[in-house]
Length: 355
Image (cartoon, rainbow, N blue to C red; front, top):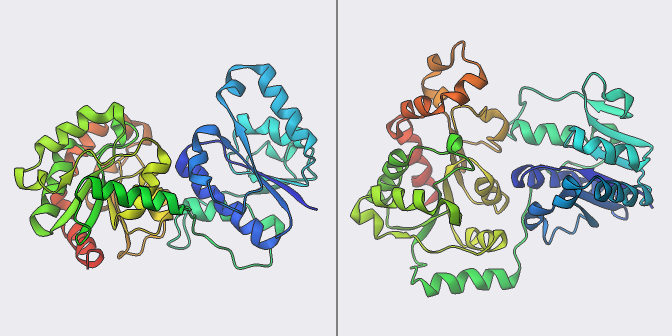
């Protein structure tokens, strides 16, 4: 029986996207053992995925202790994998690849990686389809296997009956009128440099409330509550009545269940957006000025999936500017990214997806 290890040691969005490798491998090799090596903190987005045989968890102890890391490497060695696909392609993943002893080792091409990998794939730099660069790059790692299937590019999340019931009961508890559409607003990014300015976000939220009879939920984590309150207070009083500020879960699975009960998502790029897409929810992404949107603007069709970037509207601001310079000066770039620039796109998205 074939044994395959897929490695993706990064954040939630990356782990979710790379799970399509496991899904396609399962279609191609129904009887294979397909293991997935990820950070322990990301497993919530993999629950219920039957394409994965076992999760190989890279835990904090493996980062802190060389002995614990060595024990993990020997565990990988014992599994005697036939194929290893390293989607992470960083120093941290190279030792697991080396210890695997796999006959076929696949990763992205770098000058020296041919010493470790049997197959190296050139990383696509310009997307060829609307799948998005990150999806096309991941799927290209399957090329050396010459799979005789139609590749499935869409990551999936699986929600249990209990989780569906949890979300429905939560909506009832907070007296959310389910006769109305419910919008999840990703109000805060994973860092200040990936967070649309509070006053602008409030303006976007006000525009929604002024034009639609909807429920709105805020997505934030406990240590972001001060900024969340700031954004809420910047909204009009009429808007505030449509916001259910305290409808939150205790963990990532709770968020997935709540998102599953919503109709669409709008806001900052990040894990919340990626999870919403995996639940097939329409999404409108506001990208940070320093992020190259061609990577994560997945499935962009101008209808169900739309994204906006300052560069779309003011490309002259980016001339002769390095990524580092843009990131360093993200505040001034964000100030140029006023909601009026993409108001037409926002309205078209809402009009189509709130029918």
